[in-house]
Length: 272
Ligand code: ASP
Image 1 (tube, protein in one colour):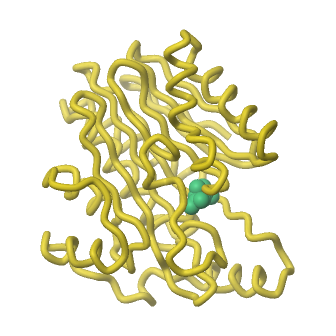
Image 2 (image 1 turned 90 degrees about the vertical axis):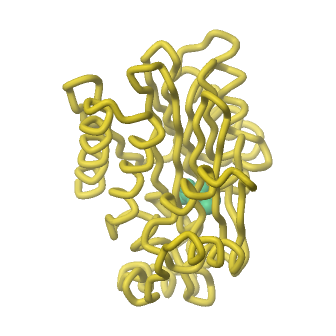
């Protein structure tokens, strides 16, 4: 319930920005910042820990008009990885920064590093202990994402995650990889994914959703087709949200849980 409420809050913040004339890019950034602050979700504060007990954060943001994008991966603790990804996009020199280089970019852009204990939660530590002791599988819930279309028809997508609990330090998932976990093109759609990143990268899942949209499928069907391919080929599951150029949107999941929320004009719609 709390995760769903965080989604509704994020959708509402995005809706308010869009209503005030902000871009889809601003809306997805703000929505993901809200979700990164929710300690129950696997992004920013409360993100999944590596096997060494450290927090390494991945995030990407992309806009569909000029295909500008920014991303960070294996980033040490900073409160809002998605805001740093946005700064990467705005600077425009490169698309993806990793690890210490990403931290260096962030510090130079004026972001203050967080103390690890400000962002590492007791629940994340307990989950890591359970995974290491093999009491639970390393599956995580709560990578966060947002997609939006603004009044000018521009699309944007953003995704942020701590990765997979117990991952080896330096492991990077699909979320910051364009065409795998995140993508936006005003002509076809904006896409954000969650699930086992290795599978999403190996099958370029976001690009597959794009291809389904290009073949004329509705957003929810496009997302489900890509997830079914993932299940058939690699026996992996996940969830995908999609916003389309015509203002329709959709989502699909083969994973058991994925709260999401949508807002259209004045209506905020929460979903299980
Ligand atoms: N896709 C994320 C990753 O592999 C994890 C997730 O969505 O649960 O890093």
